[in-house]
Image (cartoon, rainbow, N blue to C red):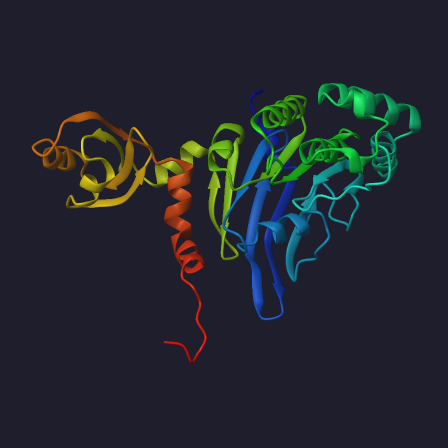
Length: 319
């Protein structure tokens, strides 16, 4: 990936300043400030209902903030920059009775492309995605994965300066996932700024230059992965031992044992004390003190929401 220039930090592709958005009595986004540098991949993470989609729709001017400023590609006026933005929503939708070629021509026209440029771009993208033979088939004949790749092409056909992807890999098999990931990285390498919303923490770790986490409408993380990991210290330990997760959960000071199969991941305030407790009890095959993964950090922050989702709600009258 090309290095980010210091100038890119001074003229962000997206700038939100003290943005608040409410729906009735519910505050979806609260006093949010954010600067997305040009030419980077910026990951948006957070539990369902945390404010990610509201933030994205505010950037797209689908929602207007109750207070604060929104600047996109240097423009503050509503929809002024929209022809320079590509958007892949989480809720996919294509015209099923149209052919693939006509659908792509339609989306290209919406962004102001002429027919010749649109036809050329469609042919190139369909070849890149392995879908050339489907160009004249109706959308309804496509598999889910194929349709998802067509929707992606529709979002990028006009070579947007800013590309917003909401769960782009959802439901894709590993082969199609890699095809789409390579295409995203290629766009990034040519200067497209990418905002990438995902629940896949591993994908966010390997793809994103910066990571932003919103939780209950508030910004709780914003920075590079290295910066974020430093905030949470080095209390994460990966252990391989006889007895596995069950043994580890019974040791003093151990928090959050996560079974990874051959190894277990846990937190402990004093890893050396953990090793002293562990050694007399079992054979230790692997012991590694490491930085917390983004998955671990996400769970630490979002645990109250995740616990609430798992507790069944009851109504009065039942035992």
